[in-house]
Amino acid sequence: MRELAERAGISPRTVNRIEKGHPFHESAELKICYAYSITLGTLWQVDLNQRGNRNVVRSNQYRWKFLNQEDAISYRKRQERMGHEYSDIEGYGDPDTIQEDAERSRLGLNGKSVGFQKLLSASLSKERYVAVFIELYGSDWTEPPSNIAFVNYVVEGSAKFIIQEDEYFLNVGDSLYFESDGKWTMEPWAEDGNPVLPTKVLHHCLTPLPLKKRG
Image (cartoon, rainbow, N blue to C red; front, top):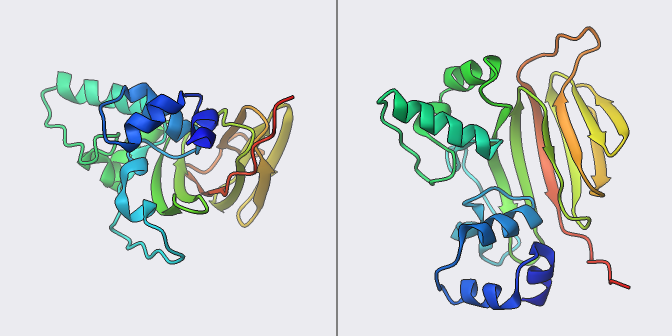
């Protein structure tokens, strides 16, 4: 409990309330998901939290979600303004419409979304691990805690990763491992300025590293 509270920046009392099933503010869930570099909704999926060393995920088990929560909110507002029915199964930016390749492509190529993600596999019990498939249309950045390790593998196109002030250019088949140390960014890239869209990346968030002792 204390480790989770410290990692997420919330109080042990809040963690205790969550574990007991009491109501809590959405901001607490956001902080927990951010601390473990997982998407909203993933935290409560029972199959990912069960203990065990085997986890089979079927191709239709998880849904495409917006990579950026602000893009998801803007999309929902546009759909509602136009009187379109909006179906959001998990409640976290995974409407039926973006399950279609054509709609994701339309949004990405028109600058309405920096990208989309689909959970491939995860274990949130003993050793935490999350694998996500990403379709990247624009620049996306995150600033996770300093005890998370990542591996990114480019499946299609080319990508640029900016970790603090260092830049890494990856082509198909290239991979990049790094331990988070502040803000990092990934975006489609091409030497001639015309990147393949979407750039497709396998994004792995590895077991959190031991927390550094303060002082």
